Image (cartoon, rainbow, N blue to C red; front, side, top):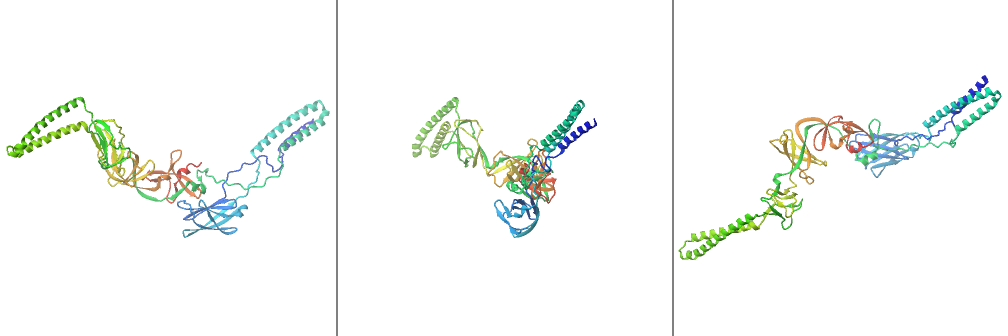
Length: 545
């Protein structure tokens, strides 16, 4: 019986040993994942320049920018001290310089010295470029291999236990079958070893390969952004150095563009009537007109009773004209003989002329319509009359505006002094310089209307367009002035700016801002002076994931 237990134990140990024995030492049955890496690179800065050197196979790409503004420099002389001796970088399209570097095939650290001459200034920038060892084609044990090994150990232990039970039962019934059972155990051991080796690749391992660089923009685990220099140039990233200063406090007011009342006018009908076009037709919107131009005619309708009264009045005037004409005819010969004075003859003639004028005016009322003329010179800003349209009294037929003379009306909850300066910003981002003209004395919806004159180009502005007015007050505040394009909002609504902490790395900085003017905001907290902040392209950086 002791011999039987010894045999069973030996079988179980052999099966477990077969499961633990590797297929071949150093072999890997699944390829290891290749990590995403960036190409080997180095950077250096001076007070004026920033240089980045990137290894690209057997060459080095050199990116030269201005340190303060991140503006690429395309014209410069770059001398490079390399392990193979001094060489001169050649300029290529896209403001990139390159040098040949066949010695990059060997891994290691290489100390390079760049001598940059631009605009008469010379800077010496040292860089250490490290080429890592090439990664082997296969790595250590993978998760899939360890999983199969554990599964095989469990199966081997179960098989050994079942085989031990079978042998124990067989030997108890037939003691002489022990040699046969031992042979079966040996066959199971050989089959297990063969299964361990089945499907194995016995070819020689692949030669080590250099990992391929992937210069992709990405957000790093600490929240900062890695943006390669080529991507920065495509996105036109520009920076500015922050500086602390004192500025007048500004308030933000809603406003809209209105026409100058001294350079605009309304065309209205004094009496109701039917509209009729002038010989050239109704002027279209945007048409420039001069003061005195005929824009439309209004023919007043006449009721039946009005026509009857006019005819009765015409009859009376005709009768009076006939009587006075006979009197004038009788006075003319008498005046020559002296029987009638010349004064009586002149009075009769004047009376006759007056009656004829009244008769002609009454006839004119029936035939001639009212003429609508332009009160000022400008363009037709509003008005779409139609021939035959009935115009009520005081109806605005046309609105004429001089596009070169516009005002901005803002609503303020605080009284502004006459010396306050202001700027305005349209919905498209256009900034306008304003001059204070005056403020109202009565409230309008619990606010005070304030008028500003627009300085500069107003060609792209329209009457009624809404703007945001930034009016400065007498209070002073301290902070850092930045362009509005430098401030973006994250997903949580927090205002932030991007600091250029390294040549290819940007760090988001939460800030607290206050309005300053139409183009700038005042950073009250979050950043200090002397930092490089992205002022152009911040919205594009915020999209990097």
